[in-house]
Length: 359
Image (tube, rainbow, N blue to C red; front, top):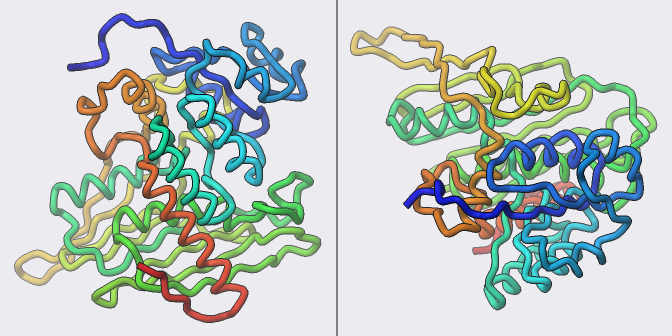
């Protein structure tokens, strides 16, 4: 069965209209057939209506909880509100898309997982980088067995922003900082390719003058068989290295970021011609039968952030079997495991030691 059946659109409420809500969620929801961006929760109705004149704007989440015509709540608020708002949505029998990080602590994530198992329903976390073009290319190379058993996985996400900006992510406070902002993306990618780590060592720091939250991290995750994942993010680097993947059959190196975020910021409609096509494809290096290096530029599939919301819509309608496994929304158990690693990283950085993850 496919999702071609004519059904009424699912009304969606977007809670928060800051950077994530405005740049990512609103355009992606509106570009997804079967979803209707019905309501936005914001204290700045004029800003919302400047972009979305046909959308209802309400000042708080109570109006969303009371409106039974709404089926999905998308949470794009500051991070410390994620857990409480997700609980409210579950208790109101709404499906939930919550921006990463899922919660601030592992215990919060675990409790919400227990709640959804008890009550039923649907949650996914907006790990949109699982639909970056380069990430999908690595997944394709693994499926095609052009990359073998991964021995080292590096995921880098660096930007050169030496000046601290006046926004909540860069001010002191719960859930602020680059480890909570970019860490969940990089952790989720490592878990997908490597499985659960045995232990990790994290160095998390604030290196910019006047910085109120961490803006640099370097994390080494250790896995069975002496395999490693290296996760690095930096707000003071001009490096554009993105991925290094080494396997027992060859390696893949990628520079430059997926183009979808810049396209969204520029107002390009998601799914437009050329959407998500990587302008700087990576290089696969293998060794031929004569022992010579063979380098191949690999233009993989285009990035597809819309896949997450298509997955939400099809899961709602019960058509999940029609979605390829690698294109489905991030499962809840993995979002919980991401928070386990995030919290373990904070302990490691604070205590300056390797920390073993419990089974």
